Structures are given as structure tokens and as C-alpha cells.
Image (cartoon, rainbow, N blue to C red; front, side, top):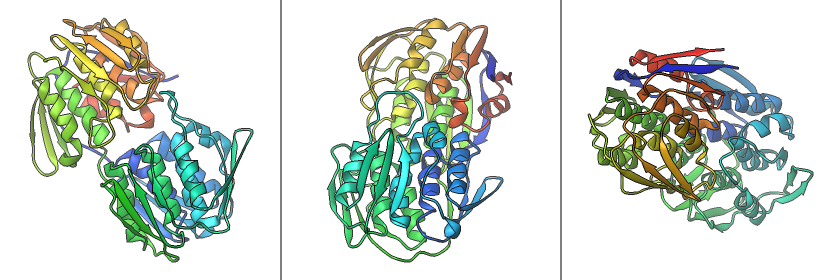
Length: 417
């Protein structure tokens, strides 16, 4: 099994560009089945999760071709309604195919989704909303049998601004009869990206990025070309990389507005950040400051996908920092691994108390989920001695060639078997 070997202590210096957002690519690829058309999607990262979505589309009968960072999907040949169980169990985002397939074929069979084990992520909101729009959903032996005579527009109030539920409703509503309104919708930039792709193909979606999204159902779609937005979590991870190593990194192809909550917290640690329209320079301080409170929240709050990386940073900051994880209840698995490296972290339910130590030391650790694995990589870069990280397949679900990017910035990191 592949692993990272890191010899820490190097300051990372240089510049790099950020590829497209995984959390935009996946719902947009799911959306390509709706229009009975051809889609060309640009700026796509080479990730295992993207490969899984490609395999799902092919299993449904679509023609999928990849050339570099571009994927072409021809959904005119779609002829299946059963989504393979092994692929669904590997990736949670596959659940958004419920909405798009009901839009296209009025029927779909799908398994409960898998993905990183970071706590319960129920799909109740998805099922409740789709039923409200006229879908009949039967649950049996872990399978969901979904069918409809024709989806109808609805006024939907979400109990929580779930990204997945918001996306599923949008995908279902684009062909539904009438005007659907989603209230308390998720506001993430990736939902704006999905809206932009759909509207280019002929859909009528408005309000993405706000708490109220309106979708007017349409019947016909046209061929579309769309470029994916930069990945704000990859950008945020590299920003923390500069801070934790005392480095100087310039990030190109970023959208600064998507990173404001991360910028604010990094500045609290003493990190210097300079930004213009699509470039950020991050200079790590000689001495990191602790943070009084870091609380994860739905966008535009601090992203849960950056909590682990910030914990790694705060583990060597002067003083005590408090982290409160409000989004997922089991997202502290990396804390135990950081402790193996000398970190002083105590977990109390959803709260983590991080007492900064003078230095971390290399150790053998295990990536237990995607962002936790990234956090261990950053900790390894800042540690004294060698760090060995196993199960890096988790990391590769969300970062394309992370070790090569870090090598190019001056890190001593190798990927080995």
C-alpha cells in the first residue's frame, strides 16, 4: 500500500496554481445526465473520486472521454437506471445522482452512499425533499428504489443548509413542472458553479450563493462547455502549508472571496497574507499565535474541510486554541495521530483543546480520512525527523499529486509502496 515519507524542517517557497474544485466537479458531472446532450467540462483535477463518477456515468450508458484536465460527456446514449453498488459505496457524492436521474429517466436504483467515515451524514433531507416533489422512494436492504410519474415543483424549507440536499433538489427541479423554491439553501461557491453550468445548458436557476434558490423547470437542453472554479480547500491547505513551515508561497488561480474565512483565521496566527483578484501570497511567521476560538460552520463560515489542517497548525502555536466542530461529529480522528507526533490535544465531544508544543517529531501515522490525511502531511512537513503516512489513498481522493506540488515548493517528501 502506498505511503508518504516526509523529512520535515524545510521552509516551503515558490508558486503553484490551484486546479478545479472536487466539490464542484462531482455534482456537475452528475448533472450531465439530465440534458440528453453533450457537455465539455474544463479544469478537472485527476482524483479518484472523479474517476468513480466517470465510471458511474459509463455504467449508465454515457460516453465519457477524458483528455488531460478536460472531460467530455455525451449523455444521449444513457440507457441504465441502476447505479453500481461498489462505486456508490466508495463515494458519498454519488447520492446527488438521485436528483439528476429522476430528472432524466424518472427512475433510479441506488445504494446508500459511502465515503470518509467522519460521522453520520444522513440523507433524510434529500429523501424528504424528493418525496415532496412527487418521487416515490422505497428503502429495502440498503437500496433506494426511486421513481416518479413526473416531478412537480415545490416550496422546500431545509431544516439545515445541507450542500448535498441543495444540489439534489436543484438537479431534480430543473425539469420539474413549475417553479421550485429552496429556502435555507446552502450557499457554498460550488453551488453557484453548478447553477452556472446548468444555466449554460438551458436551465433556469437563480439565487445560488444566497439562502433562497429558485428553479423554473424546462424541457430541453443544449450542448455546453464549462470551466470548474478553483478548489478553495486545496488553496486553503497550501496556505496552511506556508504558515506551518514558515514559508513563502504564492498561489495562482484562486478566488479570494471564497477564502475569506480561512484568511481571517490564518491572520490571527500571525501569518501575513497579500491578495489580489486571483493570486494570494502567504508568508508564515517566525512564531505562530494560538487562536481563541475556531468554529466550523456552513459557508461563508469556516469550512469543516479545513478544520484538520488548522489543528495541525495550532498544535505548534504558542498558547491554547479551542476548536469547535459543528458540522460533523466524528471529525477528530486525526487528533490521535497528531498526538503520536507530539501534539497536545484533548477532545471533549465536538470540542478540541489544542495546547501548542515547541515542536512535533516524526512518527508512523495513518491517514484515516481525506482532510485528516492532509493535516498529517502538513504536520510532517513541520516536524523534526521523518514521518511515514500510510493509507494515503484517502488523501488522493481530494488532492492531485500533492507530494509533487510540495516537492516543487521545496519539501522533502516521497511517495513509496
